Structure formats: structure tokens, C-alpha cells
Length: 347
Image 1 (tube, rainbow, N blue to C red):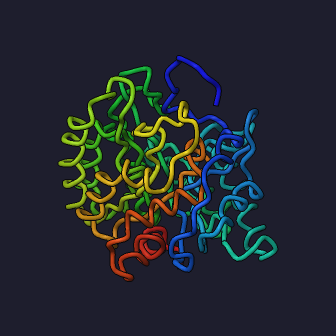
Image 2 (image 1 turned 180 degrees about the vertical axis):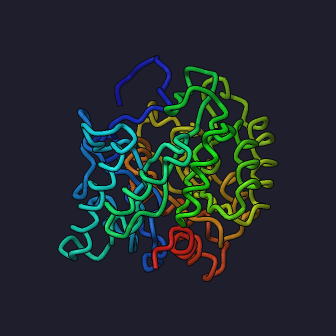
Image 3 (image 1 turned 90 degrees about the horizontal axis):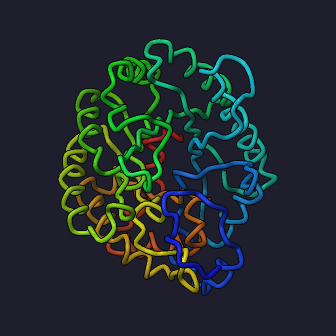
């Protein structure tokens, strides 16, 4: 890693440092036969980073038994022209092509993008239905819902989603669009930061028939103005997570904490952490979620290649398996694949 006195830019997605990752000590794969559905990864071609099928498979085939994956939108391969509302359908077209390549069996047994989570602007209200139907038609039967990121914080250090304020989920024009999503049998992947969780609780209660899948352990922040505020952040986060857990239509994804929690400074450490170190960083949050939601409403996610800024795939899933070590065999099956099959309707 380059020596610098500048703060690590947490919250920003950068290409992984492959030379630094190569220093991560190899670990035996824990429970190598346990079937895994990776519920959150991206695919993209960016000016400074390529992460397409070959790169994804190189990570997936490092020892764990990954049987399928779910793609999550990342503003990738939007159409260059046509009506603006329909341009995100290009991402679904792109991912459906990769999914079809994977389904041929020529790339191994893992079924990449068995589920596709795209983007449609729900603030279109009733007009969102046409966009959602276009996604469904383009997906080869794999479209499962959308992620409409609402993550926002007043601090410019945090790095916000493509929203202008903290209360997207409360907007009057958002909820008719969500009603259209629900009527089509699709789910909402919800991405907010932990100070916004009250809005998500209100949404989950207002739409009890909508399957809501909360990303990244509820967006816990640990950098910028939240640096050194671990106890206060946890105290603010946990009651809202308990309220969400009381909503039977809500599922929780366990992962995606490398950038936002900032418990491990991958920008300055001489080598990547072990799975035991990562498990210790994330344990209070993930164990709380499993306790409150139960294994049947929790599922692990890699958030690759974003998490690859701080760890390799094999060590990441070893960390998850350490966190689930006290679970029963049935609970482990749920956490690593069964919950994903139900929430994303992969059967």
C-alpha cells in the first residue's frame, strides 16, 4: 500500500489493490460443502476497473460452494439513448446475457445472476409500472425487484447515493411506485444509512405486503462524523433494527460493512485481515441481526467487488462462517442459501 497521511476514503468504491490482497495469508475453507447463494454482487466495466463474468468467477471459485448469485444494481451498462426512465433496463439486458452464459454450464456449476435486482425510479409513481415490466421482459425470467438507494447523510465525507435529501422513502411520489412494484410480485432492496432507519420502519409498516430486503446490515456508519462514536452508533442502530425485525415482510442482508463501518482500515494496514479479525469487527451487528430476525430472515452477501478493497472472497466467507459457528445445521443452511431462495424466489 502507498504510504500516505491522508485519511482513507471510506465510502468510495475504488479498484482493489491486487498486490496487497495477495499478501492475505491463505486459510483452510471452513465447511466447504455448505451451499452458498451470494445475495449481493455487482458486474461492471468502468474506466479504472473491469469486473465481469471471468473476474467474478475467479473470486467465486476459491473454495466455497457457491451455487448461485444475485446481482444488485450498480448503474452499469445503462442504455445510451431513449427515454431516461427506461435507460436502466440496459443493465438488466446486460446482466441477463451474463446469466445466460453462466446457465450454459460452460463456466462451471455456479449459476451467476440467478436473480437480478435492477433499478427503476419509483418516484415515477404509477408510471413506474411500464419500466418494471420492461425489466421483467428483458431479464429472461430472472428479474426479482429493484434497489432504489435512499442513503443520504448531511456530511459530504460520507458519500451519498443519487438522492438530494434524507427522506426519499417518505416522498409522496415514491409510494405509488412502490405499490406498483408490490402488485407485480417484485421486492424492494432498501439501502439507507443507519440514521434513516426510522423512515424504513415506517415504510415497512405501511406496505406489509411488500418484501423489503435491507442491505448491508442497515447501513451502519463509522467514519466521518461517526468516527469514534461506536457505542452511540450501536445504541441508535439497534432499536431501529428491532423495529424492522418486528415486521415479518422484512429480510436482512449480512455484509457490506467494509466501507461504511470502517472498523478495519484497509487503506493503511500492511496486509489484509484474517477471517477471525473480520468476524470480530462485525460480530456485534451481525449477531444482533440474527438474534432479532432469526436465520430464516437473514442472508449473507459478499458485496463484491466493493468488499474486495479490504479482503478476498475466500476469507470473507470464512468470516461469515465463523459468525454462524453457533448456529444449527438448519440455521446455517438458511443463512447461506435457504433464506435467499425464499426472499428472491429462486426456485
